[in-house]
Image (tube, rainbow, N blue to C red; front, side, top):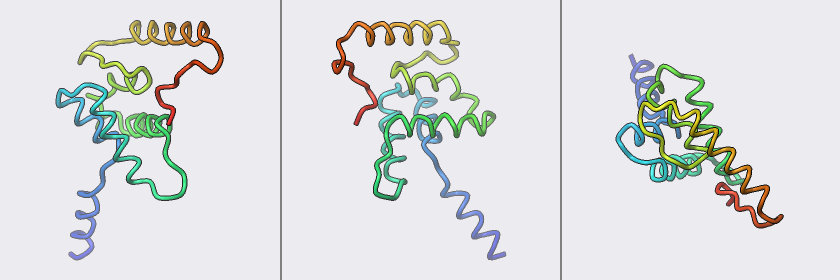
Length: 123
């Protein structure tokens, strides 16, 4: 009995960045506040000398969603927003929009002089 109670307490306390990001997005929040909350949570959970970069945190969220696609099926449409920073409407495929965004980011990076490109995930 004690072991099962202990197991339930552990399972109830398990949360990750994907849980937070997806919960907020499915609740109607845009990318920015959802990302800020998830990223803050991930940074707070990580112990150690080195900070977690935003790129690492975004990768952690994607990895968590990919590992459990059934749990996060309502969140899959939002994953591209972790890399573009724009909110996608619920239910939109977004593939063409994502491709256009990537192309425009690439073009703007190529046009800007070296050292002028600003990485939105730079910390």
